Image 1 (cartoon, one colour):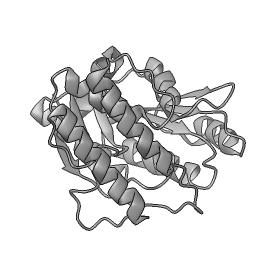
Image 2 (cartoon, rainbow, N blue to C red):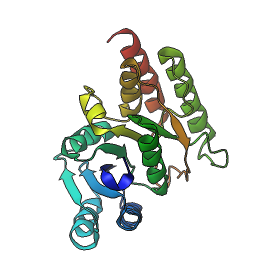
Image 3 (cartoon, helix red, strand yellow):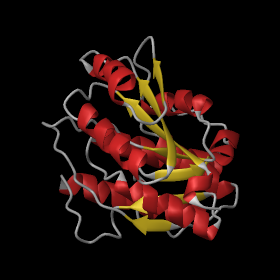
Image 4 (cartoon, helix red, strand yellow):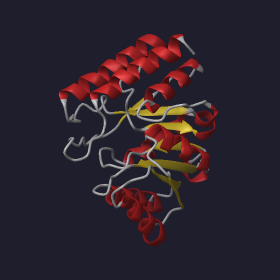
Length: 239
């Protein structure tokens, strides 16, 4: 199967990203309208209070060169809930999560999809760690991510390097079959735990990473790491 033979769903959860959202959407729009890969955007506005909603509407109506589906929550529910909402609308054979900031390079999506199709795999993660030229924003975030990954590997017998990565590509049928309950950033450990318990290995590819600071809008905090560890233990021993 070739990339031009299938549709890819790019799911973008958004909450107050007015400074990076339009450049990100324009970048994805230009990339996938020009390279022959069929793609759709599913943009879920998690009740933003800045101008993100207006940006989404104007982009969808005036700039989009690929199909766009938009949703807006009636209240802020969290990233995990936004992803679950967007999955209902996904029409693609594969679905990938794309954050609304500019920390990740959408060009890597094409490489991840090509890997999945070439190797006939149902899941592939983009690893920031495997690209040794990538910087990190804060040592605490870097070490926290490595520790979460270490715990994941120990509990589920995996051999991955970057569990908290945003770029997680799934066959849509697979991720829809998983009974997700996440509402916030615990999407990553929950989906990884449940995919592993289903017997899937998780291959990785090196990707680029351009971290932003808290002043630039980075939202994850130390407690999200604690919650991730709890989620990993919960689904290993209690579910």
